[in-house]
Image 1 (cartoon, helix red, strand yellow):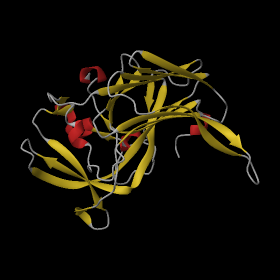
Image 2: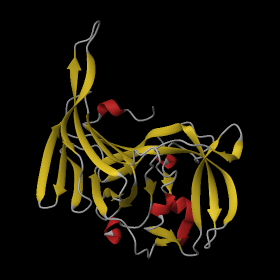
Image 3: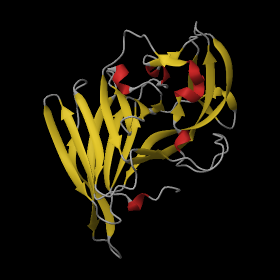
Image 4: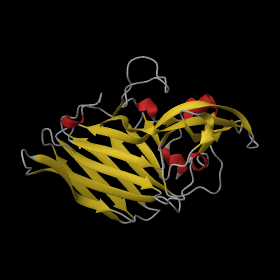
Amino acid sequence: MAIIESSATALVRFTGLGIITFNEEKKRGETAIIRDDKHRLTVKIQQPKFKDGAEKDIIVYENIAVYDNLPKKGIEISINTNGNSTVDGFEIYKATGEFNRLEAEDVNDYRWIVDMKSLHGENLVKAESQNRFPISKLFIGNGLFYAHKLDTNLFFSKIEKDANGAEVSREIFGNIAETIGVKLESDEVCFEIKIGDETFSHTLARANGLPYRIEIGNMNYDEDAVKSDMPDYYKYQTSKNGVTFELEPIKESEGAGDSVTFGAFCHPIGGVISIEEFV
């Protein structure tokens, strides 16, 4: 693993339906968590503890706070550092050189996260959709952003569709990261969640070699879940010419025409539209 997680004060991990952007002015990463009727938002703060083992002590993680069944509106999560942070604002981890999704070896390279701008270039604009779902806000400051979990079991093809939804082309795309990781290294990490009119906060003090974990998931666990999040993402940002892309799982050994079933798979995506424009 290219990222050394053990030196962190806290590790944030986000999995599921959400659009992440980086705000240069406010010096933070911002995620618009899409709150449809099927995905459930859960936040867990976990503390590492030693547990006696047969031959040596082992480290286990215990929940110290859990926020589940969160309402679809009025949710804002802020995570930041306090004192001697190794990152000012945000950094994005990328391995040296060009990134090739079919050949890259560094599993932590942030470019494993699907990026709408890489699909559409300068044609990417805010969608004028009238049927958007509510948004929960996630702000993370002073962190190193990277791909935490790369799903190597699923391989995808990229399908280009015109403004009428007709398939124009199809090509091998590769693997997709399903979890964004953020490493925060400082004296303390400060967590705050606003739920309507209530605010809950936690201060996580640094313990060398034993980082806290903040697990945030916005997942659809239904076995009959749709196979793609892309249609939901296009309700928030799309292309000027109406072109869209679909990502379809394939059997790597048999080629791009052979789709597979794979249960619940929700992946975050990168964008360029500010979170405030979605609200």
